[in-house]
Length: 315
Image (tube, rainbow, N blue to C red):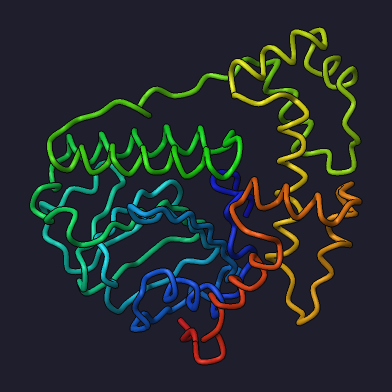
């Protein structure tokens, strides 16, 4: 299961069902969640999360189908389904799901049945932000869906952590505005990338052993070096080298998130991606992701602190 949106804030990747549930409990703020996995599929999943002073946004996915029961934490939750299907057991027939958006109130009982290949985005807000009855209309939920999808497109091109926080706060304000009747189209318009930029981006994302060469990248894109520089800087707000640097940093993060042992060789992971100066790498990493590499490892361990206590029941 490969995921791009909010990849820079990955917390778990290819996680076992017990790890995934432990992380859900951590993010949800309530340990009373239980997971029943469909054993006919591989039980692997991922979680990414970005937190601001207005709440949080997370992206989750699972290769296996599952049933999740328990109680929501102290947050108002808005979930957007991207892939697969979700059934809210016990919900009223007039609870709108046409838009692929589901809503959970603070402390609400959870009983979800989810299909294999499920992927979603979840926004969590402090419960003081609004009341449930303000949001259950199809117009509002469709507006929220378009807003979140527009944000996720743009999240691929966050320049650094400060930019990510600013854009996420803007998203959260837009969503709250929708819920309070102040409709916004800030993120509603989809990004349409020039095909030449697309070819360059695919090369930088997929060719992990490629050493940056602007002339070669320009030939791949089918434009001059100068035009490629201009196109990327004007359309996605990053120069080709900056985007390539972010791809390399993200790959280091993936390895840190995947690391299972007590000893994590951060400098080796960095060196494998061409970062030979440890201090400079750590500074770049914090600039892009808002934390040091060792903090990524520590947070992963905090997320999984109660893994040993989690037992995913057989289907």
